[in-house]
Image 1 (spheres, rainbow, N blue to C red):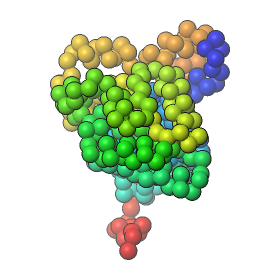
Image 2: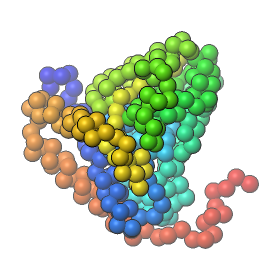
Image 3: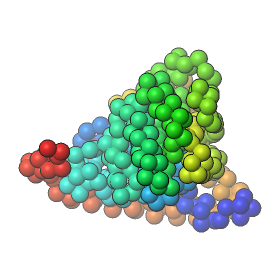
Image 4: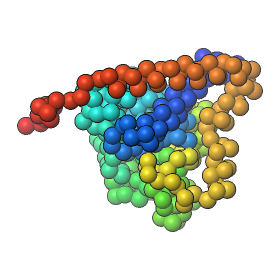
Amino acid sequence: MKCGYSKEQLLEFYRKMVLIREFEERVKFLFLEGIMPGTIHQYQGEEACAVGVCSALQRGDIITSTHRPHGHCIAMGMDIKSMMAELFGKQTGCCKGKGGSMHMGDIEKGVVPAIAIVGGGIPVATGIAFGFKMKKQPRVAVCFMGDGATNEGTFHESLNMASIWNLPVVYAVENNFYGASTHVSLVMKVEKISERACAYKIPGITVDGNDVIKVYETACEAVERARKGEGPTLIELLTYRITGHSRRDPALYQPPEEKKKALENEPIKKFSEFLISMDITQEELEKIRETVKEEIEDAVKYAMNSPDPLPQDTLNDLFV
């Protein structure tokens, strides 16, 4: 390929992003139809962030996620059947039906069950990185967070600690410009969240979070730096959620022109155009989409046919 990446690697980026998008779209309608219980915070529009960062990791690396974790889980290779079953609250779910949307994970895949408290995953990832350093393990922790989390005390305390001790951690801020319905400009004076890194004398980088290759290359550098013992990096990924904050949010606070521009620049559309410029055909991309949709329908059937938890299951998996 002219861009320096193999066709297989580029199509794998595309497949993962499409898998996240189609998974989220299917889940959205399952909720709207009243078939699926609970609530959801979805990831449409931010797929390049998860795929780009997680593709830079190795087996043994660990991520922490947020109240919007589905994309991170899929990007880390979690089984979508177990994820769908978790959303239905079934025994076969990745957390046995006890976590639901905001707390899914699979430590075997390197995903700490997601933490829905804003900023809650930041000290956890920092602590995991501290453990890697103490054990002299060449492993890296990645902490995903939203723009709102960077105003929490845990953000500043954790970055200070990680900087002082040169911990192998990467802080990935998915700046979609809204903390729920509040625009980022109303809650911070800095123009770039990455500027906050200078307070801790660590690298701070802002990149287009809708460009999966730029995200991947930036993450590779940060992960390698952490793995070599050179300390943490703060990466700001500029992106946009093309959905509401949660399932009942019509996102009327997003100006129409802003949303229109975001839809023109959303990561899958953007990457599709790039792939076609690399002589990959539309038919090849459509085939991937069709295969992904079949995979998701299989996951829905699996989840709906899985057994519900038993009352006594509430007493399992407890620390006593």
